[in-house]
Amino acid sequence: MHRFRVFAVCFTLVVGSKVMLSAAKGDAAKGKEVFEQCGVCHNADSDEKKMGPGLKGLFKRDKMTNGKKPTEANIRDRVDEGGQGMPAYKDMLSDQEKDDLLAYLKTL
View 1 (cartoon, rainbow, N blue to C red):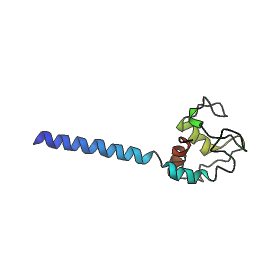
View 2 (view 1 turned 180 degrees about the horizontal axis):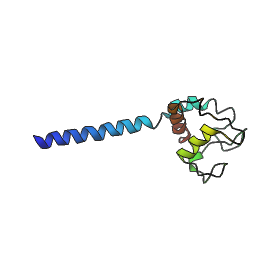
View 3 (view 1 turned 90 degrees about the horizontal axis):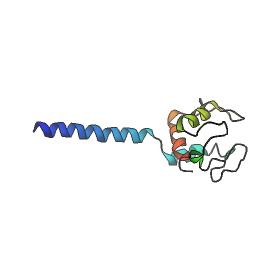
View 4 (view 1 turned 180 degrees about the vertical axis):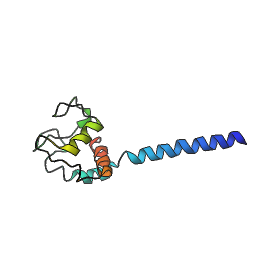
């Protein structure tokens, strides 16, 4: 009986952790809505430059226009701080909106 309780507690912790981690990753569908304001300057369906670079395949590239590797942290920093003509969105988007946006960008 004791082993069953230990197993049940461990199983609950593992399942609960996975649910919490997946919830924190962002929702690509919501991220697509967030991207609508980005679409004024960035193409989502090509890598051709609009006002800013096209973002199709962003996470598959060797580097971004600022020379950094396109990791979640570097892209989030770019969204937060802006640069090279891009405004800073640090105070304009919530952390959840940024998570959703990153989830969407991964689908491009």
